[in-house]
Length: 123
Length: 286
Image (tube, rainbow over all chains, first blue to last red):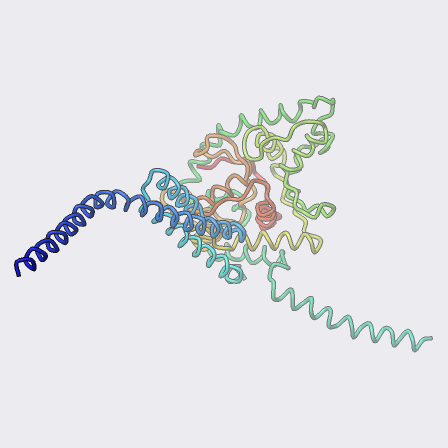
């Protein structure tokens, strides 16, 4: 019975040690994880922004193609790039999204004006 | 033989009638194919909007419809700010090129030819503005082309406009290709663009004569008569296409290049709308 107690104590202490070590490991890893998260997020943000700004630029090129480019889109694209360079990804994304929205409106204008202009000619 | 001829004539008439009908149908579908009807409709519009103003008076632009502004403008005309540009233009015009020739070799003895521009050049299939003609004259004589909108080209243009004073615009649209260029310019004029969603007529036809901030909007009838213009805002003389660019930017549309096909066709349309009106350029505007 005494041996059984001794054996139990050894098992418990090993388990406790392991658990403690895991806790130590986790504690040791935690700062590293906290440091890595923004880096990973930043890379993801940058990749997202690259896709977004490409989409915004492609749409702007389309508005040029149909001769309905808007100056404000140039401003938004420029602001987006400058914000990205400054590391302000929220602002960069917001500007790129705005540019996309405005380009879509410009394309809509170009499409509707293919016929609408006629109604304004004095008769 | 006689019957054969008659049959051929009959067949030809059957073929010709649908062709003519198609042509008329096209004309009805596309109002741009009748420039003269457009011009008359525009004149009627201004006659209705401003029944107390003679149509010929629209050559003075906004000063035809605003008495107080007209008074100020007439006082300014005593010592017009564009006078220096005319003098400088005259000197440039009469200075021989390096090869000994001059602008007179291109345009003849009378520099007052602005009333014929822009014209449609059938050979090149496009609209030629006075500024293009001036620069082509230079290049044909071994000189470099001048910048389009301001500076020496605007000064030479001002001198030529000054010599064209009192003449009436005589713009010709006499081929299907010329009509197509006119139609493009017309479509440009009435097409909404920019974030502000304005067309040229928004200010100059629908809202003509109303205040836009501190400025009264000018009528499009007579818009071409006074160019080039010294604008107080610019502090120098500039050509009409500079104003086209400015207008586009004001409605937040990306402007086109000076002397682009878009602006040449627009100038062709707009000038034709002033056909028969007296030139009084260069002018001064606020």
